[in-house]
Image (cartoon, rainbow, N blue to C red; front, side, top):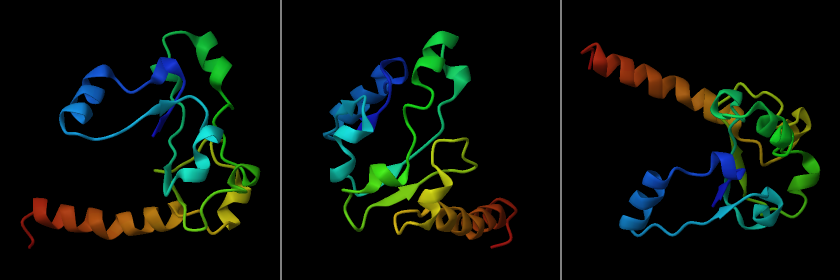
Length: 124
């Protein structure tokens, strides 16, 4: 499930690749409409530079904020991922929930990057 404002919808060529490969997906504008069914919520920040119209950015800024109230009816096993650093799209109160997994995600990224660097440098 892709959640975004229409101005940031998944590009057509990527949707076509998913269709060609038989991947079922849907697109929605409101996270509230799908949050209860998710296993993973991968959050990214809204990138102002991707909005051709600054007014459109201001219209949707703040519309996609993960906060404890949003998590009331989620699956107990649902995990939230984020590339960090966050810029207001996840409130700090979410950090204390069992759903917050972005700090573990970041920590596990360190050995993965180390392994990639070792491969690139021919050390393994």
